[in-house]
Length: 507
Image (cartoon, rainbow, N blue to C red):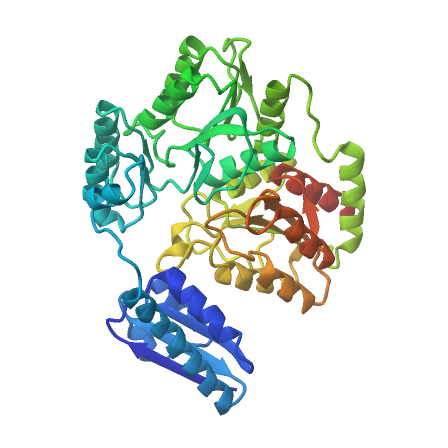
């Protein structure tokens, strides 16, 4: 093998662009490894772990480009370098030939006068002035940017409310407004269920399940994960809830969030109890149901139950899960027989943070220790852990200087490969999120790695998506099942079948 590690100081590229460049190089015949990344601490640690760094690259800063290539021959390495240069140059050439792009909201609105929503995705330090420009232009705002202070978030939302506008975010990655998917979102049918969510992948799971049950949505209004903190006060959550309550097309309202503080929970529930007249399904993930809420309020203990209850209310008839008890038991028996390392544990590697959070809670309900990075604990090493492990690869420790794992599966795939070779791994659990914004083939790297493994570790997956998504739900499921992966119809079912299989193998 021959290697090339090069540092280009002060040369910045977007992480998504570099992911695509790296993948293009990796497809060159004879290339075994290819990483073209910015010099963040996370990326340098990853290169060091692979033995693909150098003394020079270890000195790189976050604004420096690191090129790390490994190939079977000098000729293959030369082809890899040529492909890299071609890919990097393509970005500049395409920009030179691009059509006119407006640089202000004012000029954009002249080109597209019917616009009523702005999506802002710039570094957090620069997001607030841009957001204020959008509000001043009379636009509702989806603020994809993160690292905006709580004080600025509240100020933006108060200003928006005064103008009769809505701020979704900061750090809001999912919404469907008037049938249009925004950022990370699925293509779902229109219907009678309106959603307010402080959870991106949680709302994607629910609206995808609703679509599978034959029920569509009116809106899926994202709020950003911090809207329900006391410093912000649930401003967007309550504003969106009021909007859906007044909307004639919305017959059922779904509310999704991780548990807010006691004070904010009381505030939301009081509003629902006293002012909302429509059926409401609440999934404050992990929170206990409250008494005295009225017949129109329904608490759900999982994302799947949330979708089932909402679908039943919308249809006026009971909706049952895709897997009944007998099916789940049959799947669990087969999964238990496939376990080649009976003394191991579960490794659950998620791209969706809310799905990982639900997994942690459900694993704990089934009993046993759970090791996770969801409580702010960084650097959790899944290898050799004598416990179930739940890792959210969307946490900041994995995304600084890299694209989100729903776009770039590199780090999660590397962890998956290590799990397949770890004697303490009995089962691996994965999620794959489809839709706009996500990778065109989020499962591809994992299928390849599974084909090259010894087959002693069975894999269970939950795929969040619809037939109308660009990736096509049934096509992805078919490829996973062909690779021997058990595909569950929901996150809860995936965890239930895994836990039942682990119980069976311990007999």
